[in-house]
Image 1 (cartoon, rainbow, N blue to C red):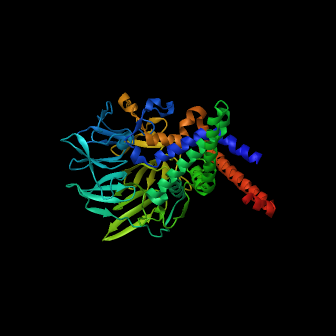
Image 2: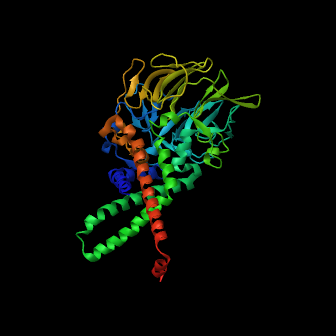
Image 3: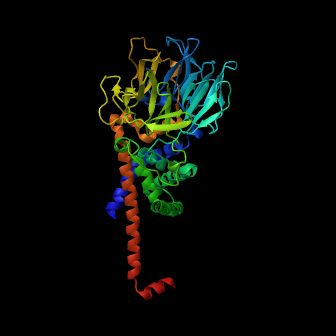
Length: 517
């Protein structure tokens, strides 16, 4: 028992503050829409979080307009500039309050001069008369839009789960395109996705999220009561006898609840900790591209096989089909002679489990595919993928590491030619000779959202300025430590309870009756 107490007490005291940060940040992350309007000043963040040279996915892409101006869009919202990218002006009027509401993933200007944007929280059109963005509601509410493209006088709108068609002459969705599963689809889902929704509780929808929130609140309670139980005796020495007794009584009640919550909640606590450990490198790497059977009766077994799996789309005129990037790879979706057909490409370019960040057509049958795994030229006809930085072909498996040598967060294209890439860490990198645009102060000082701040705290990246690249071990080491705390706490309860039962069993019958009387 002494060893168990030691391994339960000291790790708890050492990492207690970090456990509190895990819980609070996890609750914020579980309810992004609630906290989307709240921002945190960027200048208060460590140096690695300061925008410079268009880093940190500040900009994802550039849209040339018909008047020769250009819109830059990404995590900083939408900014208007000239074709030489010399001076940038705020173009975010109409978006709801909060930098999270400005996060723009895709933009398009149609042939009839309408301007649309797809953001983290919805679908918007720019009103030239009002000089502001106005939201257009979709059948599924305000979903995350991942791609907008024009095809045959229609606007194709791709969300994470659905594809919609809207006539360019109106504002009403004319069709919801239900993409069938490809031939031979086995219904399996990504292990990363499974662990993610289990960890957050999303696997059971809002109810599951609220349960995980309660788990977080319970851990906060156990952590604080553990501190109270440990430090109260020293503090109580200076109190009067009467006040000391009150504190001691309260302490006993709190530690009893501490024990009961820890013991009876240990299955959920263990699941939450273990699944969280596998959502970050290095434990993420072996499971990143693994597929497993969907858990029946949960969000993973959704009737829509593409629920929360769609990531990007282009229309290939040669194939006369949509090429869609999903969390499970690239698929071809075509409608010929009234018949739908979906197939998976046998040879695919590497894409990070963190998702695709650029998907652009270069010429017939050739596409640019970029993610944190790198940037590749992919020939859909031959299946060959070539690294656009080194010029070397991809050999063997096309599974992309979460982070490659160049973590591409965005690209600058001009007339289907790659001009520059935007690396997540170092920012703007010229591919063609040109003057690098200057990141003005009004863009570089844009705040960070509470959700992103919570993510940096939850993953431990925010401590990188103290420990460098060793921060990558933060999640697994914290996970192991918390497992030790939980297991030793349970064993202490189990051994203590067993001793009480043994002691009660050794008491003679007449002594038991006298105790009762």
